[in-house]
Length: 227
Ligand code: DX5
Ligand code: ZN
Image (cartoon, rainbow, N blue to C red; front, side):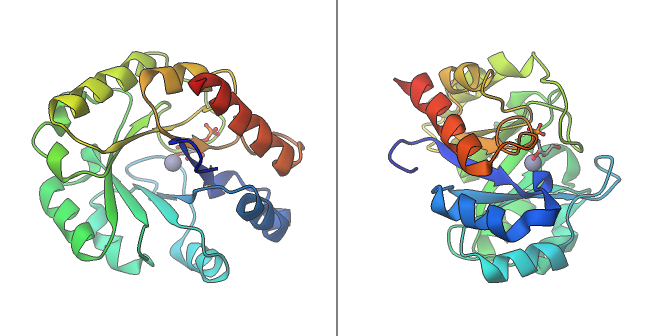
């Protein structure tokens, strides 16, 4: 899967929870790049994500890198509860941090690669003073909290705006998109410059479709978009 530069994260929140083990096996076999763990506190975003006990038990059984997405108010409170291994990515929301720069440095100290996520309504210029410290920018293409939402259309041109911003700062940070990353939306997202896609209920965990087939179709949509 890493033959091209587009990374894929599988959104654990969208798992079929009756079949966790076979799904993990299929994701590993299919060459997925990361497991995307949504942590939601019911305050910053509605609903609740997956708790650290579930996350840690998955992590103890699978060696895939983690892509933690912290939809949590004042997230530095929970940094120490995360298992952070070499290569793991931790993304905090710009809107949720009281001291964003300090939080980024703390995550680096804990050994993480660091991302900042922006909600659909948050301007990309809020990244200006921290961009040089970032490994990843995560653009929310839906409002955070729930799976299966419709795309917020205005976020599509935003992807290319972030790409230009990164180029201005000569930053190598990756550009992630999260929310309604469907086969229909992948071409526009990739054309805009997204190079890290979160596969959720719209693109990877689609109804009763076999995950191996979904993953192959997801990868094929990426390949077609970069050809
Ligand atoms: C949304 C979460 C996503 C979720 C989206 O708040 O952050 O990670 O998995 O997946 P879709 O939109 O495809 O259901
Ligand atoms: Zn997410």
